[in-house]
Image 1 (cartoon, helix red, strand yellow):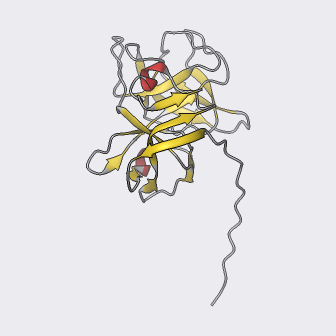
Image 2 (cartoon, helix red, strand yellow):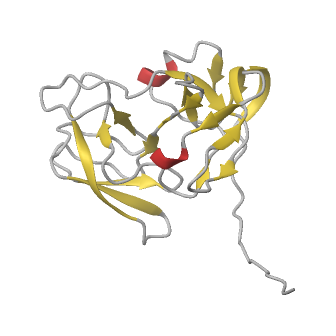
Length: 190
C-alpha cells in the first residue's frame, strides 16, 4: 500500500467576528456549485435556507476605482464570483453578466462585464450579485441575506459545504454594502 502526500499552502485569513451570540442551531449547508474560488471566508453572507440549502450572497470589494464607463472592474481577492453571475453596484441600478475573470495578478482579480454598469464605484466600494440582467435600472439581490459564515472553510466541488451561520454578532473589518446590511438586523459591523 502506497502513501500519498499532498502539499498545500494555506494563507492566513482574517478573523472578522469579535463576538458571536446566536447562530442557526446545527449549522447550514451551502450550495458549492454556485461558488467560484476555493475558499468561503468568515463573514461571508448567507441566504435563508431554500430546501435545506443556503446560498452565498456574493460581494466583492473594489481594489481600484471603476469609472462609469468601465467594463473591467478590479476587485480584492477572496470573492466567490464566477463567469455568468450577474453583478450590480447597488439595488435599483443596472446589472450585467460577468464574461470573464482574470486571476493572474497577485494583488487583485479583474472582473469583466460586456456592458458598463453606468456608475462610478470608488475604491473600497462594492459589486454585488444581482438576480438577473437589468438594463432598465431595476436590479435586486439574488438572495435575501439572513446570516454570516462564522468559520471560513475551503471549497470542495461536487459536495455541499457545512458551516456555522450566525444571526446575531459583532464583526470588525468585514465591509458590507448597505443593501445587504439592512437585512442583517442582528449583526453589528464596525
